[in-house]
Image (tube, rainbow, N blue to C red; front, side):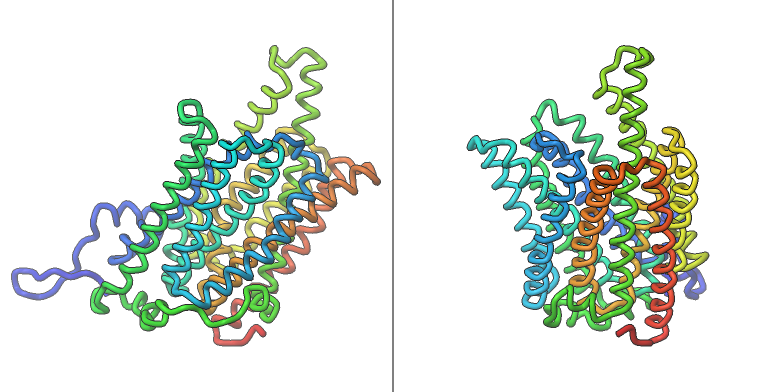
Length: 466
């Protein structure tokens, strides 16, 4: 139902969209009455990613062990995956006892209190190596969990039809937050100091709590006549949305649903592939930098400077690609092939890229393959993964999504680190062989995509996935 205004004859006529609405329509299909909530959610996830980006330099400052060693990454990723079992169980129990705005408030305050504890431990002179390992594990839990919780909240606010139009805009806030956060951290780390960034991060998270509660309260203040018809369908049970979720654990929800289990497997497999890819680009760039130094073509730069320059360029490229894909392609892809069809874009890109690398791992090729892969992941894939839960019950939006986006992500990372360690230690695999492993895993990934698409159609048509 569009906005109307009375003319001279008293006949209602549609109002023209405002300036902001017209601008946003360049990037997504947004309709009257949808702008404010969408922008508030985009601002919320922008600040969440900004907060995370602010404390990433603290992690780098604290962690003085060799985190590039595959076995160390396996230990830390494995520790994170194990801890996620308890985190998800605790979150599921809390979600069954308090309404969503209290749930988000308490869990976010918990992380803020953790940040304060780390800051105080640093001031008290706790050994840096010990603090660094604990902080590395904690930040891996924090950034996965806080983002999963946000997308559970966003899924709870929209129907499938509205969400698939609005999510590309909201996800753009996440991409922008990551880019701006890294820049802001670089600007203020010298005057404030790396550890004081913790306090700024905590303050930003408090603003996120206020935003979430404002968005939640807004849904219960608006009279039904002011809500779009499509939006009304998602708000018929507004009273139910203010109540705690039904009892049940996140892992139990995942394992009793084929749809959720396939999504979990997809997430684990993709993170395995991505971690192998990161090992490939790290190894190739290191060998190229060493060769440049040995041949005298490094222009006087040290190993650290060469690597720093390469990865700065690489990360800038992937961030630019992510922003462009998010702005101009994601909403259009959703419109052309739907949410389930969008699942196939990233694995097809990965299949082509790693197939090329398997014939010869040139640095420029690896750089562009990984930048395009990560750029598509941070934009299209992240938006698609979030939108897959639009058709699920509320319990699955919060509890199952938290389990999938935490435990299965870190589980995939840990398995990839173990694979790299075994392959390099016992089989002397070269980079091209690791690319072949990724090609085989991508084929499995594509097969799971088709299984998810099948279950998605069942759910859309009212079928069962259990």
